[in-house]
Length: 168
Figure: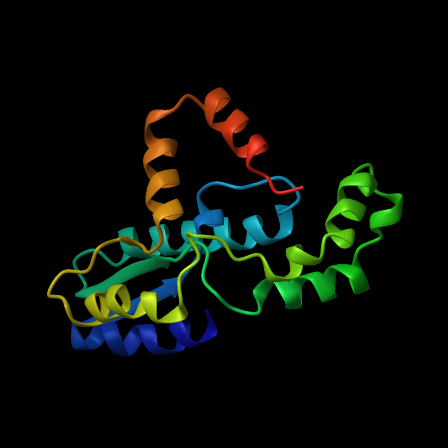
C-alpha cells in the first residue's frame, strides 16, 4: 500500500498506470478457522474496489488476481506460525485443531485443483498489458466455482457448503 500511495500521484499525472493486487478465493468467501487470513484478504478486496471506483477516469486501472489453491509453502509456513502463535489448546476448537496437527497431510495439502504458481502468469500478463483490465482474475477452478456460487446461492446455503468443506 505504501508503494501504491507513493506512485499513485505520478500515475494520475501521466494519465495511465496499473495497480495489480493479489488476493485470494478467501477474499470473497471464507472457511472455518481462517478468520485472520480471510480478514486480510477481504481488506485487500475492499481497498482494490475502492481504488478502482476512485480512480475511474484517471487512466489508472486496478485489478485483483484471485488465485485459489496454488502449490506453495503457504500451508507449511502458516502451520509453523500457528503452532508458535496460537493458544489452540485453550480454544473452543481445540479438538479440531488437534486433529489438524495430528494429520501429516495438512502441512502439504495439495489436491486435484491445486495449480502451479505459473498459472498466475496469464492473468497477470493480461492485467499488465490489456487495453482494459478486468476488475478480477479468477485463476483456479475452485475460485471460479465459488465466485459463481456466491452470486447465485442464498447465504444460508453457501454457509452450509463452506462449513462442509472447511477442512478439519
